[in-house]
Length: 319
Image 1 (cartoon, rainbow, N blue to C red):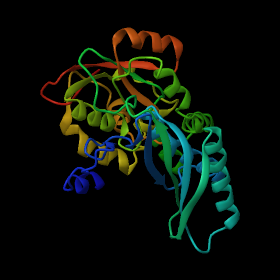
Image 2 (tube, one colour):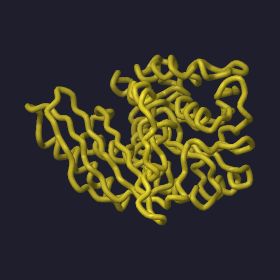
Image 3 (spheres, rainbow, N blue to C red):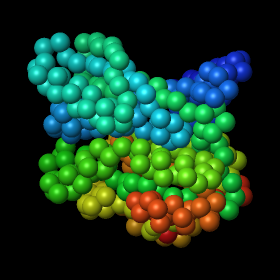
């Protein structure tokens, strides 16, 4: 929705805006000095787990992720709270504590925020980071011949939906929560040792939605091998049982026209490629030689495809 509205607005006429909203990138970048630029982003969402503390921590990890995707270092955060006027304030305190401690884990600091009364709980942060104005990473630099790596398994959306419907296994929920709580800090630090051409974090638009943004911004086609995409435990089972969130269906309706399907694959696996992620991993495009080194130095990074010259469609999906 916001993407469609922003497309009607002119690009900011300011030479210090190094990354604006025109390429649907993860965060904005504003140059302060020849040696320093700000990375700015904001994200918030409704509860996806029952425990207030864990919800707050996941929301924080998710909000920090955009700064890491740009190769930046988060330094400060402002909390965003929507909370019912008659709800338990102890639960709100736990949400804030979870977020505060996860922000602190990133060597970042909460310096304020804003709250409103709302019938539906929402929580997140506006995060500011720092990056060198000549060394940030965008989603627009993928080059033909690059390898594609993904640093976290996908499936948080279907696991959360299965939890809400009462048939998710406890061990699968724990694995999903652990993944969502894991900062992309280590993945960012690992990738910065190499010649990364493009990066984005995989969140609400799902793997294929964010891959489409990278492909369009870079003027290339991303070829993804579905069998190589890492999946959370239980995710295939829950997709097979129909634990499909509304966001998954929306993502598929929006992105599927940009996908060239080559060969047959299980329907439930294809569902997962559109599954909206919370605090997902980094999708990284980098030269083949560096991809092999990054896989060795950061074992969580999994090769899932490659970058091709622009073809008929932005995405090419292989079994």
